[in-house]
Length: 171
Image 1 (tube, rainbow, N blue to C red):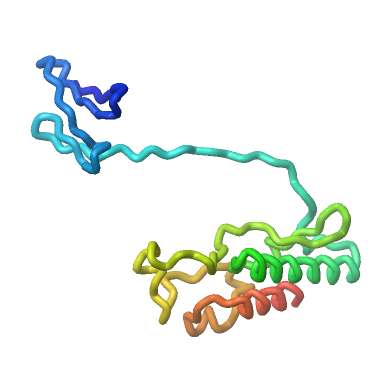
Image 2 (image 1 turned 90 degrees about the vertical axis):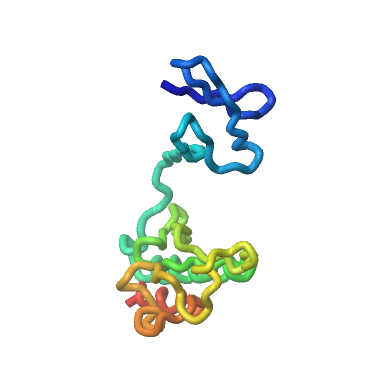
């Protein structure tokens, strides 16, 4: 059996309990693999699993009480989208019936920035997929609310496409 442990000098040691031998793999020095005997082991990936549990904040836009509340919430969501684009330089990318909410005060807001596009992203560190300008690598959004140009022509996502999605929400 083998066991790996870290010492205080940030070196990774692998010990072989059957022979009592140990050797340093030095994966903190830029190596991606370490060896135990003749076996090659990959560097472990350390991930943190988090879970955020909250209570609901508002109701979906399709549960509006009257037309005034619907139009107010939609206007507020469009204004919030405009501020997100203008101030933070972010496109939402998934405007749909399920991502616009009405707060307790009757004001609208957008949620779910999972497919958002950071327009201020440094392209020098982007992957090859991110750097393609002629065709995106994948389409994102909720299908019934996606802009026609994205569906038909594989267009690059712009704020006009999100505005078109707001129109489909209203329809």
